[in-house]
Picture 1 (cartoon, rainbow, N blue to C red):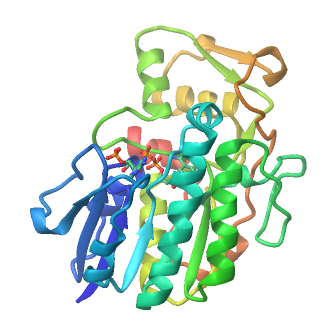
Picture 2 (cartoon, rainbow, N blue to C red):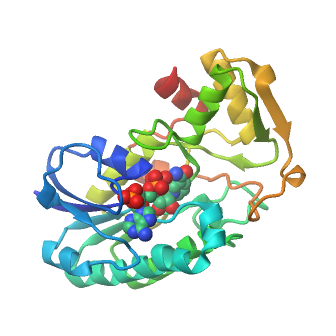
Length: 291
Ligand SMILES: NC(=O)c1ccc[n+]([C@@H]2O[C@H](COP(=O)([O-])OP(=O)(O)OC[C@H]3O[C@@H](n4cnc5c(N)ncnc54)[C@H](OP(=O)(O)O)[C@@H]3O)[C@@H](O)[C@H]2O)c1
């Protein structure tokens, strides 16, 4: 049985990875403050902070594959605490890369579409990265190290991920739906484009990558490119919620804590060649999960 170590097991993506874990893997989970979902035996849970990671435990475990999702993913928190973001997102990933290489473990890393500056859109894996904020810079520096220093590694550049939170904080889509159901307005940008990725599709793709031999960067997004406002319109359409509650705004009208790339849409031609996992468009994904 393959031994898999999943970091960030208590997070949004991590909990879906646990839910969709194949039956033929032995799963070990790392978390920090929160318990991972499911009923993993205590001996398969490692609780430590990436500010002071206990890599000894991982060396002793000797996993075959590491799926590294743990991160400080809040743009605002990263702007406010850049040194902490550097430690959690970059330094810890660099250390984990060295360890994975040393013990011969395959490494799958979840990066972000925000590594692009958004001037062009429709980015494939050959496009130049130019991260605009602290979060994206710290994530990208980790990817650069990982791809340069570990030959059996994948960096999955994920688009904006949506779906149902299995525990803890509701996702942005769930919060939007809840507001609309209460009859409250929702303000959305008309000039920020993404290719939203269903969390179930991301988890399926990550599990597939854990078992295949693709190495290098891989752009992963859904098949529909939409502005944030258009995402709201799809939700209203699919779920029969009132369109008039959507308020259109441009990013220039709002005082943002950090620069945001206008168009981070991803070209997923390579992912569709390498993977069998489906990459649903947002309209289909919303209908599947919330309809
Ligand atoms: N969600 C998206 O839209 C999106 C888009 C692109 C890329 N990504 C990437 O996908 C990955 C997962 O994101 P997510 O949405 O699942 O994030 P999340 O829900 O906030 O989960 C983050 C996970 O990281 C752990 N963590 C945070 N700080 C830590 C620290 N200092 N030490 C140890 N563990 C720590 C958390 O543990 P505790 O809960 O126990 O504290 C949690 O398990 C991240 O690498 C993110 O950059 C996400």
